[in-house]
Length: 347
Image (tube, rainbow, N blue to C red; front, side):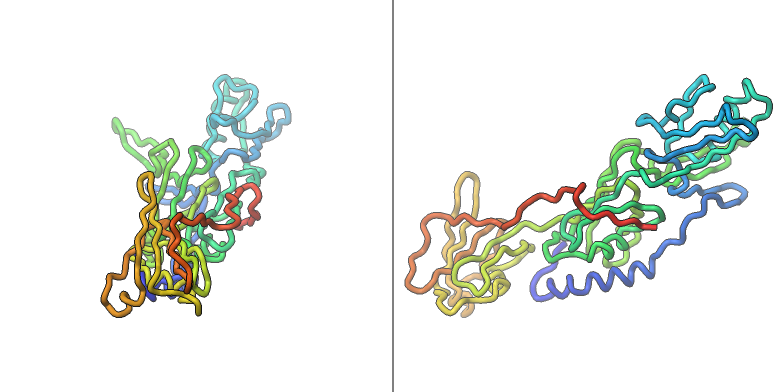
């Protein structure tokens, strides 16, 4: 995302307000578990069986054949007896499982009536929001929710964002919406379930924040259980020495030397603006680039465009230029531990 100059901070100030309006405009209507039509029935992701769900099979009029348990990592009902072949349950509906169990029990029971229920959804995989948001946290999702809503709940973006969001969707931790369609083959009508996601492996979804703020539908995906959302942080440049507020600044494309100094509060009283050094890391070496802010202001010298990890040192009056690159870094660089983040239930 290319945003420079004086509009950058205004952009972040307005982003949260814009996202709030976007949620109101794009709030999805919850998908019903079944929608009767001639050709299509939609089953919401919430009503499909996930890893961690507690499932009950009730045989009406009998206790001997009832069962309660969970889904194995491979997706089958764990430990169900009286069934010759294991019943696959992951990302299937209660009605589908009931049909399979009825078919299996019919071999030794006369016209069994089977009821399948998801008793507990609380152990489903947790969704995590990390990176350049004000309040990184975990979410337990119990209703349809989209990216923009979780960004608002997390306090919005910080000024460290690079403008990119990546969603990592692990295999088998969530179920995309399935659609039941009628297809005709050999003159006979058959029911067929099709996953909207054809890839059984893990998935990466890359989103530009500028597209999300522009209201593009594809930039505001539905978030599923187990998703890991990372708002990427920008690389940094450092301004030290004779400035009012020495600091680490998030790197933006085309940021100039004078702009970086302004972002650090401008020059200090004892600053020597004619003696500025940029330390730039190269391949196995550090380049020393000398600059004169007086000449830049007078349009007698080029306002140098910075690169990620540049260190800008403004000399102080009476001091000599540094001959050895300074060692700088951000305090508290502790990596976020997702398991220690606060948990919020979305219901």
